[in-house]
Length: 456
Image (cartoon, rainbow, N blue to C red; front, side, top):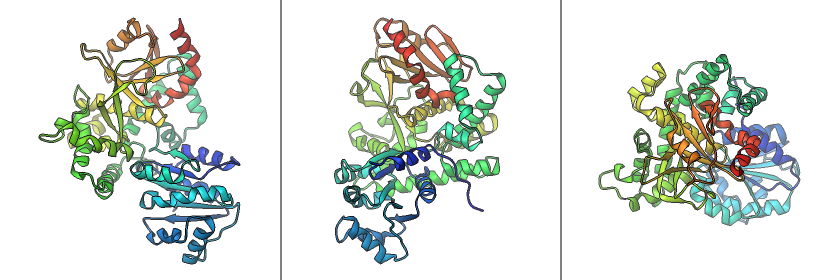
């Protein structure tokens, strides 16, 4: 029986790309196993008469296709010599080069394919951040990029049978500040907890959907984590792989602390910042972690206004973060829906993940001379909006200070994600955790309100 295809956000993007008469070759980047190949092939088989699929890991012989040069006619001649069954119909053919990280040189050909114009080209690969400078210099101006992540909560809801109307209804509740009904709160909160435990890796979600239980999902997650460790060992050329692995394994431990700032000194005995600097960037460029930098001061603009030696680190997929926890914490979460010491870390990781998948950079703020600390910040055109993630119901003291104090003129209101329902009080808009994936859409629609508040 063929596997069920899980609908993804890239589907709509790929169809729009195909409709654009001036489309350039496309490079789809993203961590391993997030569904890049599956989504591209699903689109290609629906859209093109001929799909030329070349995987540089499975068939390294294809690295020889550029031995006569990078022009389409040379490459096509070499491909068809190796496999005469491949058909090249102008205007009806997609060349799909997969596992680009194994042969970044193919990116040089993108310019020539664009100028030639007879064939569409998509490249895909994981850990592309690592060799991306090479790819960029080989194809600058002649390609488009798309970042793909593991499934977000909206895609998870699609997999569970929810449609766009359900998502629009959630947005409507946020915009109108109308609390969700008790049944909606219970339904979405339960689904969101499932999503926190499972994460968005397609293999894990598919197993859960097809079996309608969690059976087997932890085994898949542990295998995926092992694949990532193996990738670090394979691709971390010229770097200390042990240090990179040490940083990766330390993330859940450090997030469980009250002070969630990542401390290199705790990674290993005698560890120093300068020894580990490249390791953090390597993991970020591989798409395995999301880094949240500490702002120098909470004001606009955000870019360039942060200290790159102070940061929190989140795992790119919260399900994999949960799978990295110790056995007791696993049991507590799955059986009792309780995460004890990790609860704050779990919700911070999931909101950080939702913001990253929405295209936001991650920034936090901690004032040195007080207890003031804020989890995240996003912006509209005119306003800076602090975002607080509350594991327990309680007063958002730092959030209130940021809004009321004259020291922070760019901040007039804030957003709080909690386990409770929608609400508004003293400039703070409260939403359930499960709404985090909608924050960007909500702010787009409500930005006039936020910017007006900022100008009052």
